[in-house]
Length: 59
Image (cartoon, rainbow, N blue to C red; front, side, top):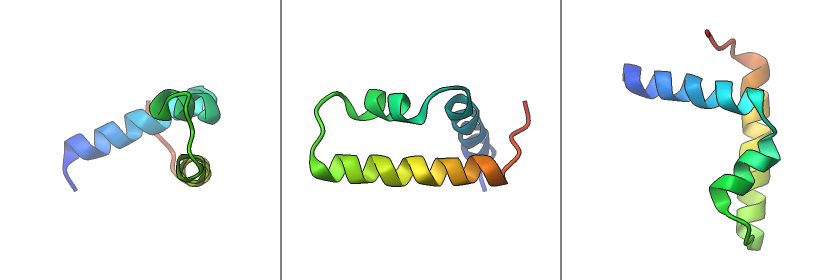
């Protein structure tokens, strides 16, 4: 895997770990939600929470 992609992924997980997932996705998706955006946000939030528990992110 490309080192830049891995570093960006670690950085994203680190930032998500330090803040509230829902607020972060509000920023990504904006304030207007359609049903599919809510579903995607829920799935991504769950996925990132699972990753956070399983992957140790080096500082």
